[in-house]
Length: 250
Image (tube, rainbow, N blue to C red; front, side):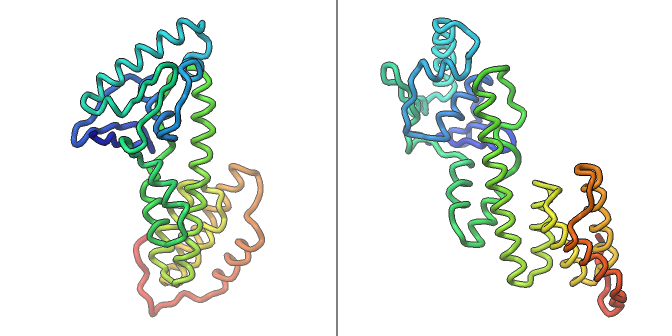
């Protein structure tokens, strides 16, 4: 059976081999919901209520039937991946793969390579940009997005600790920037950047990073950075610039 490959971070894309599959938004939502727990069966009534919560039961079931038909037609030869058994629906576990599934598997590991690969997979929120209107699916999607976002932050934070343990300043900069892109309020990311810039002889960049951190905290929280971050800034202010190390472009 052809494998359906799903890219769900940062949007939605379904492929069967090299072919990109186009399908309606409700079908994208349904396929994603089934794919995040492949092999698990779901009652038709549950799926209908999930995607058409405000509709009458018969209308919702009819809408589900139409979306299932369109989804299986779009999948073509891979349609058997969607298993319909009377009143229950599931995806064949071995017929579907997704970046979310790989991401979860990688973040469950401790190795640096696994964490770096997981960080690379997280390209944005789950199903970013998908709007299926007010329905229980939106609540489920918001919860899944938050959980996956927190998992990504945790993975990048662990990767940053690994980079620091190795004393790899260039890697720390890349990882810290990724962490701050996920959460600009992570002070450990700001401090890591300040230290890594200082190691590279980029004292001005390190000082500017503190100023950026202070601006973000004042704007978002109406407060100042922690004493640990402020102490690092004062320490860098007291240091004389190292003229022996040519500064790199920021």
